[in-house]
Amino acid sequence: MTVTEDRLLNGQVILRQGAGGYRAGVDAALLAAACAAKLGQRVLEAGCGPGGAMLAAARRRAGVAFTGVERDPDALALAQENIALNSLQDRVSAIAGNVVMPFKALGLAPFDAAMANPPYFDDPTAIRGPAPAKTGAWIADGGLAAWLAFLLSAVREGGTTTIIHRADRLGDILAGLAPKAGSFQVLPVHAFADAPAKRVLVRAVKMGKAPLQLLPALVLHAPGGAQSPQAESILRGQAAIEWP
Image: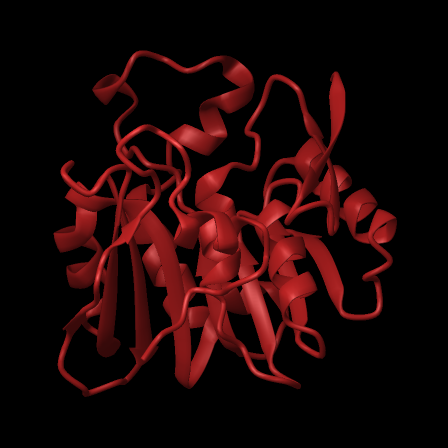
């Protein structure tokens, strides 16, 4: 496997990742910025890949412990290597696991928060087949429902689940989390202000009862195509995505 060494969060995170497989991008950066864990809390990332989102979140949140779960041995090895490269072994780890397995099989206590960037498609026939190295990042084992169930089971009562996903799956996300979660907050993400949202960030509280909140949208680009000031400050690590 050919590996590149990249920098995230304006150079604060070193990330070695496969050149031909899943590569951390804007979605991972937004997920990291949306992690609102507090000092002393524990956060799980399902499907951490080489660790881009988890490491960026850890760099943003000093004093918070992170555990990544990854099914692909190559990606897991890179995640463990990246943890060491960034000298975060004292509070970040990555272990083997799969969202289609029961969370309790990992032998871990429930977390204060869980986050994920689940694969965007359930049905392999819905898209042109991705490159073999990217199949796991595009096609969800067990479908989106398996990811949502795993995330819910991974957090304690009152804990939070945060995901970034396709905007057209928002109904499925809310329905999948609703049996055991509430207090939903939805942040639409638009490439341009005059274009429909292509992504949503969704945050839910396990057993939460507050009404759903639809938050002001995050717009990534100005009309000319340059990054918007808000997006640039988030991607550089100068600002976080704040949840009311």
